[in-house]
Image (cartoon, rainbow, N blue to C red; front, side, top):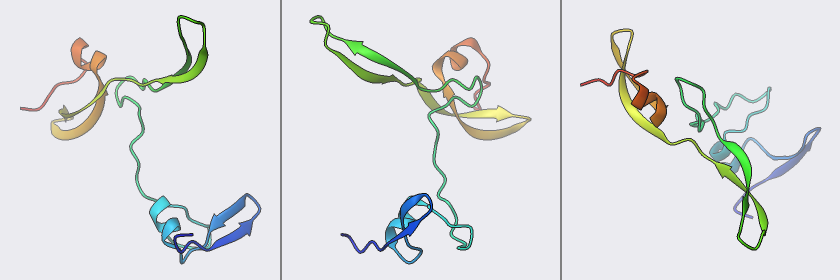
Length: 102
């Protein structure tokens, strides 16, 4: 099973500290000092718009779940006089809430 060693905890089975899966997934225990990997949320940094769940309905009325993702773009923007990379939705870009860096 890909060299994964599992241990039982109060919250279920998690990989142990010496497994590659724990380091890959960024899981950490309070007693073990493994840094969590940073992940990028699908959320606009200006207006905080995020994913919304809904249902897709076909012409035959077959219903299934789906997610509506915001249209995020990575832009270099001016923040307090400094250039910073941000993930911003296209509505914030279009409305001028973000000043793009040259």
